[in-house]
Image: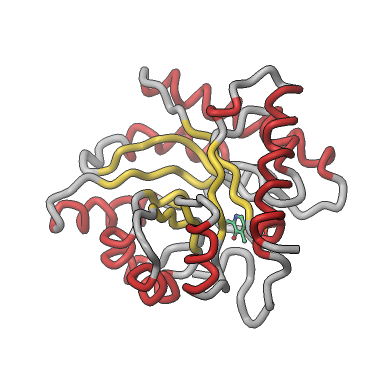
Length: 235
Ligand SMILES: *Cc1c(COP(=O)(O)O)cnc(C)c1O
């Protein structure tokens, strides 16, 4: 199937889920996850009308982004090593996957050097999987006010990667807990945290029903990835 057909299907799935959940379709944004895809594939996606892309490796994005036809926006969605924070801060419009206070401090430093503010989200390891990066839910609440001191970082919301399951319904509690945690964080900050990045190719409907504002879709758009040494969260 062509990218165009895949995109139509994904959009339809998103719209149906919005209808079921009584949500405005405009309230959910599609992030096309272009990791492992060539710049040519990205250009094809841009031709289909996609403008927002997600990448999980800084090195790959660094070569791909300049080759991609504009106007595009890029979100970082993988584990970010501190020594790549400088490049990430200049390449990406949003770092969705800030997973520690230390990384926050490094991004703050780089944003200061680049005299800019950086849009970020906190990645939460809701299910506490040892194979995944991200904040433990209680730790987010404990460290939120410290994080809020980073005045160059603009906190937009929370992100999670749900445990893999062939039954999307099984991950509903994970998405629900991220939404509830987001609400508690917003309460604590006394400021809204509008974004919830959750839902991938297999479970976007459930994520939208539970309040996702950003869904990160790779396989359902581009087809199966050629898996090399990459894992879902490779830096
Ligand atoms: C690869 C990846 C996705 C996309 O997953 P698909 O199942 O291919 O849609 C989403 N989020 C993150 C963090 C990823 O690494």
